[in-house]
Length: 535
Image (tube, rainbow, N blue to C red):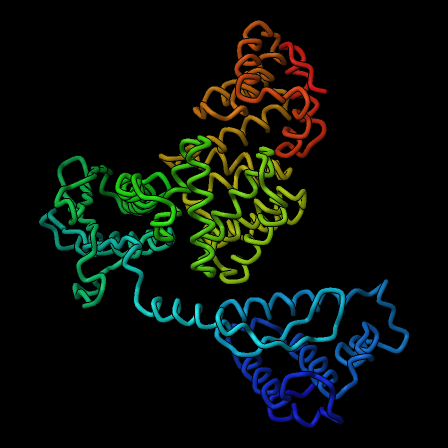
């Protein structure tokens, strides 16, 4: 199919489309030429054909059969019920258009859409007030957002007295800059070749420095994090290794990942330092970064108050900064939580969870955290094959990232990937000093599947979520399966204090997380042995 300069030749007659055809053609050319329009050649041909036919007054002919034979070279005996090529490509084209208008086309005057259930495109003026709002936001975003913390990583000093280690000090700090940049919640400044570029981050708030020492036993690396606002060192750590080349390589890899996680992860030093400063702020006063911090604070405390603050703050942040993937993903996770825990007062939480997760993935399809959130949304909506696929896609972007390893291990395990999920959970526990309770949840489910109840109970004791009914639930169930029902009854009492309606809603609540009927039945059996019958 032709397009670009040959596009106009496709118009045979004028139609009743209410917008000027020249304006629509200009908008079409802009979409096709944009690098943010991530469509294949055939999907572009699809758009070219349906737009041209509609403007030519032939929209009534735009059926699946017509598109299949004219665009996708299908034979005259094409049967859409057997070959879904058109519907599949139409969905992909819709997502490509949505992504374009989220990024490159947000200020365009005309919007071209292909509504679901039809192959006839629609053309409409974008709301002028909304465009002006987006324009104002885009101007303010032309410079780096000062509300997001910046960290300067200074090339680590070689104090061994051996110039052969110069490369090691500069190399580890360079890799540290790359690893920290993966966290997205911190802006990284790293002076390449010892040169610091001028700009808004020329005086960042946080500075990471390090020194390399050597003695008869090997090498010692001392790392320090300073807060220039408070003018104090807020964190420091020393790491030691032998001086062999293989040990150096493994040591460098370990130090880079653990230090980056300790200072920039959700529960790291920098987020904690800034969280203390925003506790007294109202949700309406928070920046997008501070709203994300509220979400991380909720993930640590799991209290109703922290949930409310995180939800209100993120909802406002997304309304003001609709293309911020970190905020979109965090809000998607909250909606998953609302659905899974059956929190009252919210309409269509599952639909909204999927909507925000998919929107974040449209904006940044190569972001590990975004894909992990999309995997969670798929798991929550019982699309287990899709959840496993998205989780593996996320994992492939950075197999050793400690930032999302916990969540991916949990998603893979609950989705039924018994080979990779539990193995990844063990890896996360081994490598991540801030691994989360859900990592132990994943192992608990797997040990329950294997009927290794002693190991399952050991995992159940690793939880410290005082306000969540899930902790006493898994302890009570596991103790019941072990024949220790008297001990299990104590946890049943706590479970019912936290969730008085569990006898009625227990099957639904457990089913929201445990997708395997066989494992769910084990949970119910264990609870029954401990004295709780779930209706």
